[in-house]
Image (spheres, rainbow, N blue to C red):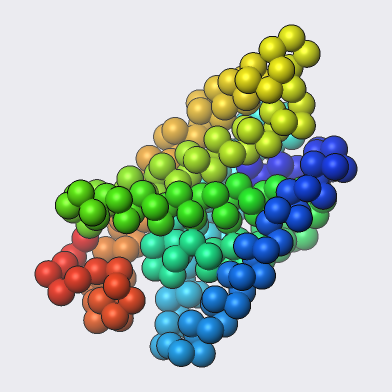
Length: 225
């Protein structure tokens, strides 16, 4: 993650693009509707998009044809819901492919699916479950952001394994190989992303407490993460 330009077979590249398209279109509709109803949230949306762009641009080499990096989608998924991150992630990945040679156009659909769809939906689900079992706000954010990061890379491993199954062990053996190599760099990166997301959310709660309460991200008792 990101899978580099031209690395996936054509059928896989097209298939992942088709799978990602409905999420991006619905997410764009959702974001436009929300901003029209709550124009004061534009700044927070910009913070979430910038956070995603900066963190996901910090790459290091990993599996051949891919790289390892934080995703940055956890903050936006917690603030605005997972659907909003599909178009935001698509734009971020497009700019990185064009300006930073990070990822690619043919693999854009696959990268969007793992980083901007699976990751954010995992973050939202983990955050909600953590709050339901009464974990603290900070712990909930940490778990959601870090595990969402890891699930993004599990998805990328599955994408690569589907495209390049092991000659002897098939998909399962290939998946274990890809995921194992990713784990070396991604586990510490996921932990770091979880901590950083807590720090950023702490600042937002401090300066945007009422707005976050209105967005149902925090409640009145949580003055700080």
